[in-house]
Image (cartoon, rainbow, N blue to C red; front, side, top):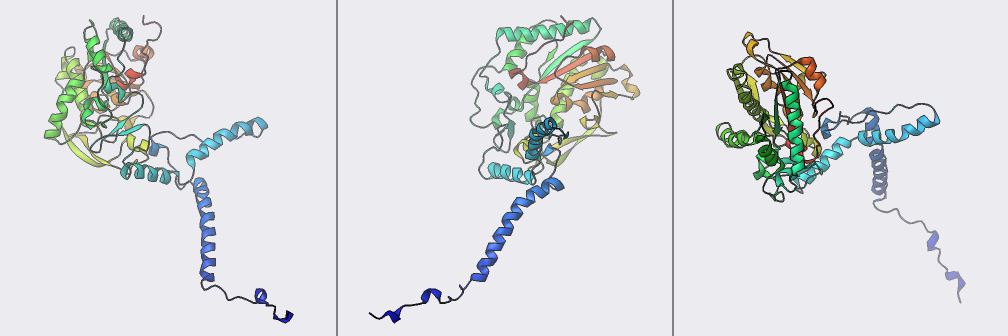
Length: 396
């Protein structure tokens, strides 16, 4: 056997692959890109390049926690610091908005459990019974109806001893006024919603002034759409818009005029303009705040400016009407939630002095201080699903 025929091919240099340089470049680009992907969010976090106050997602973000140099202080710092980082993670806003836009506009699905996508560009708040209230699946019991009546009567009687009247109203959910735009699964189940139940019950109780806004808003929605092309509620927000709030305030004024005729004689000039770039609170919940818009009505007075919730520095907000014609108007305390706050520009002109407080409670101390002629209180309809109405001690 010839032993000289062994090969040495394993040690022979091979020619470089044809695209070896490009492959090395691609490898380096991959490494650099990977490192950059890790570093960019961290850098953006501490440079605050993607920071916002929380309005983007319709909530207030947590403040950065304080660190105290002790073993207990460090342990107490770690959890809040982790939560802060999760909320302020760099480029988080971009990622949230991209996720929301893709789910809503590509998949046709909601990006938040708090929001239901309705028909024709309408969005509805979904939690706290906002849609279930319309569906009428769980009616109020007789005991619950009686409790509401007792609470409102105690307030009425307590105020009457102070020569003050009490006016209460529920602000209807958007789904109550515009059920035709609800998603198809949100069908009506029961005969009466809780709002319809309690309105009918309270109307039969003597000496209670509970204003029903539902019939007025339902009749006006067709009128406004025909005459001005406006709806009464925002498509992208949970609340009524400026026209809806104005109509609600005017309806309250007709009730007040039976006691204070000067209220019924109030007139004012205004025009309605259009804001084509309104983005409501439901868009914030979806991560689409200031990314998805609607055209909404804006009420502009012929003279002066409207005082709104934007003028609030601290609560309560006190508005004085310095017009000499306001001398015969009553004074008021308005206890309200966000729906009532939207009415501020329009309730102002019905009183010579009015004090607003954002609350769902009855506040005897504030009323004793202000000594108003009338107390107006509002509560959004959905609170009928989860709110236990009560009075502070001393009103029984």
